[in-house]
Image 1 (tube, rainbow, N blue to C red):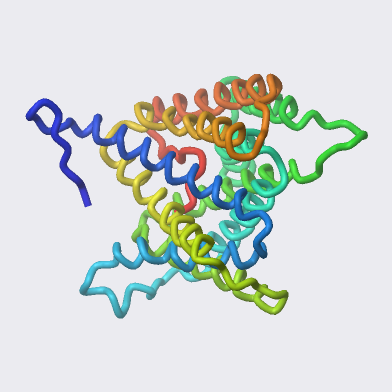
Image 2: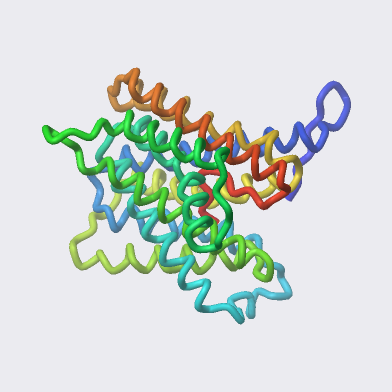
Length: 304
């Protein structure tokens, strides 16, 4: 899968390639988010179905030829079901959020995923929570509150959707930590994508619309971008230290703010920037701690 890049007549280093893979992953996730928001007038279930129908293409291409007829077999169906269910809940919540609140706000709040992972790890895995982790959690919560600005007047309840995504992401992350020890990435992604696709398909009774050629093209790009985003992310993490490439994930906020301004006539609020800064600092503290302890790190926005 590794592609070759030449710089000044020399091959790029693994770290340089890892950075490029991560940038490409962020770009793919951002393209997916932008298209979901752009297609907000299309039937929700149809958008969900198309995302995973075309997103199956990259997954199928990863399956080894010798396992093409048996790749679906697993000895851990219950954990796959748990992971796939929470993954579907998370992605549905994300899509609802993208369609109903400003793009930069939604993406900023998804960065809280690692904070929820830390909280759930302490609650269910018995991991000790010391001051470093507590400070990171507090910073993340403060950042989220600054962005949401909870009040009793004109509160947009759709702001809860990215938080549902972040909580679902935490469940997914913990499941993947276990599944990845025995299961290949394509199988983990397959069951999640299959369930999400079937959920989208059930909404056909509510009335889908026949897409124009342009909409069909957007559906194709939506699926491929979402499918390849995680492949590129995984490849990046395999080639370089997590601490080197993970901060690049926060470029997605730049893409979201830019797309929101030029495509959706959204103005980036100072509260969004301040809140995002708190969240980024909090999650980066978590990453640094996990790296020092040489624990498996799950970066924000990992859907595989």
